[in-house]
Image 1 (cartoon, rainbow, N blue to C red):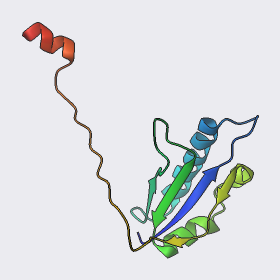
Image 2: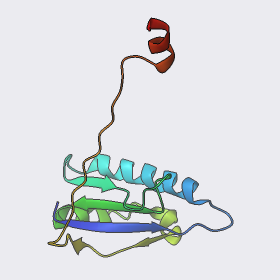
Image 3: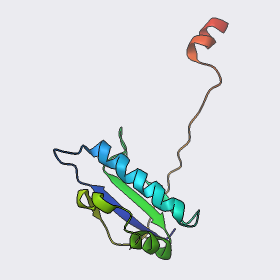
Image 4: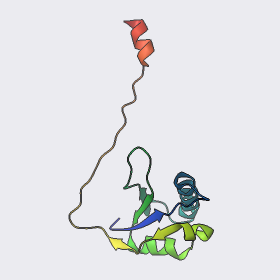
Length: 113
């Protein structure tokens, strides 16, 4: 996954950002199901409390080109700015996210104590 494409959501009075993001991600998911599995990944670089207004699609140059040739955005293309296929910079940072899932809720733990 040496390349990426950014899709910036452009909300307006008719469509809110979260609604557009859901629709774009749904269309992306359908398009990815037709491609070979494992060739494309997705991230949200503007994530804070919400996912943000940018979807970043990672993959090989050929895989991203195949995805763009499908014209999978359809009518949502007017609500999105799609960047060109860009190589990942040599100076990059990695982030690992994990979730700790405890077996007991706090209330159950208090009762046991």
